[in-house]
Amino acid sequence: MKEYIEERVVATAQYIIKYRATVREAAKVFKVSKSTVHKDMSERLPKINPILYNQVKKIVDKNKAERHIRGGRATKLKYIAKKI
Image (cartoon, rainbow, N blue to C red; front, side):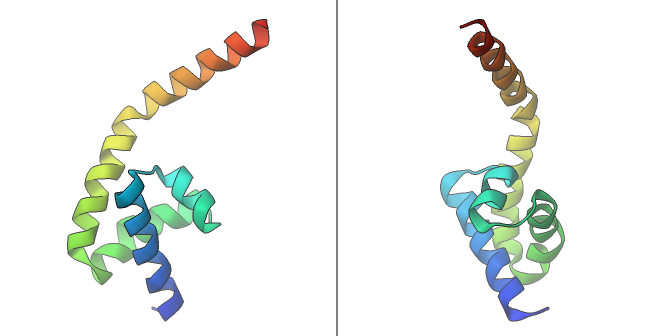
């Protein structure tokens, strides 16, 4: 694996841990796609740093479990804004 990819993977993982960020938020900050962040976190990170992977996995799993709530809230706000 190329060195710049490893650096990006570790930096992204540290960002997700520090800010409890979603995959979408991390992708925006690092200017890569959500698919890239997901692949980095699920496939590349365990090979590079298994300890960091376990920390990120907890956050990503929690965000995944809560995404239906965030989606519902976003839809609600969309329709409230439309009424005004």
